[in-house]
Length: 251
Image (tube, rainbow, N blue to C red; front, side, top):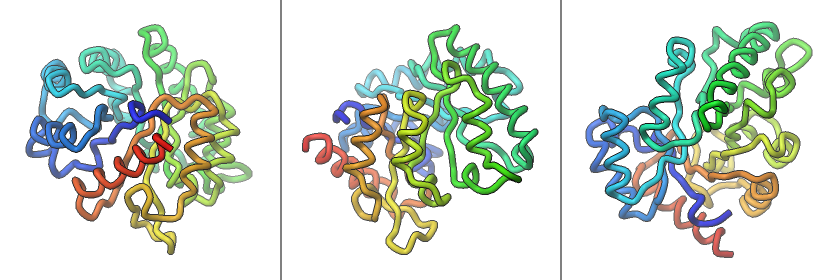
């Protein structure tokens, strides 16, 4: 991992972006981030957001786009990605009603292949971001196994959330190496010693970061994206994670 591959998922600072997207981006740039992954545009038009990013020397490493937006208008997703300068478009999760059995997940995978084809034709990379539920039993299999099996590796990449993989009972390094070159992006947050749902900044928990980052680098991950679902103090936590990752990048 190089320092210039570190990004921040803006969901972590959602309370700030909801009221002041430009000011939040300015603060993140001052902290030292050089890239962000969007989760909505904070009330800005895509081209306006791109202008703010450019002015601050920030890149859009990727964007999370909800499943219903892909279903209703994938063309608008492509246009938005081009407008903000992002080459990665990511589905952040699957709603419960769309993952109840193996057939439902297989149908979802068909759509992922279709949207992945649309993205590839436009010079974009389509990815899916996991949580823990993908690793729970689903009949005789798991949602993860079905998605990996039924999606085309050339069309559907993966944004692996290493914390959620561990929380779901799987080994993050094993999953990283199993899916190999399909991993374009990784999400990084730390796990509390008691493995409660409360996540922590990178370096404050029990995740084996040296091994995980080495594995991610070996499979060719492009971006290492800080994210916390439940930060204590969002700006303080994202700075803590950045400093730790910069230290690991320099080591």
